[in-house]
Length: 214
Image (cartoon, rainbow, N blue to C red; front, side):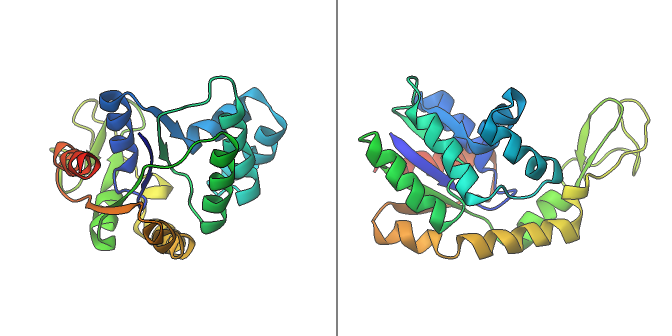
């Protein structure tokens, strides 16, 4: 199985990609991991990507394409894989097609994890963390016993800048802007299947498995 897992920030696609990797014996290719590894190793591409990673900005298409292409040209290239976080744009999708053709590989399926924006905003903007013991909470799903205070160590909780509502909405706006052409592109090739990302982790995973087994 060679597949792409698409979905907006907070949709849980990273969690589902890990489960697919474990249960279906697929290589989990996360572009975030590829970028961080390249930056850590100090490769030419890693040095170019590092400022974007530090600033929390999207890395330019050409640079991401180079890194993914490099990964598939290695001797340990993945034959069966689930892509997580790539492609994000139509230009990246075209580049990935070229990279796969060069390795005589083809895609079997593209799964689009669908979650309404308001649910995503609630999921992400409700997250708070403890700076001391690293415990995490959610104001709706897992609130602390005392508002704003960690249950474990009594430290005041904080919210990451990425989880603030205005930031979450901007991230979603950028996501929709970048992927507006990506969804119909894979649908026109008969590869795309929509799966609801609402509900529990195992519930969503079950939906993905049923789509893959058809």
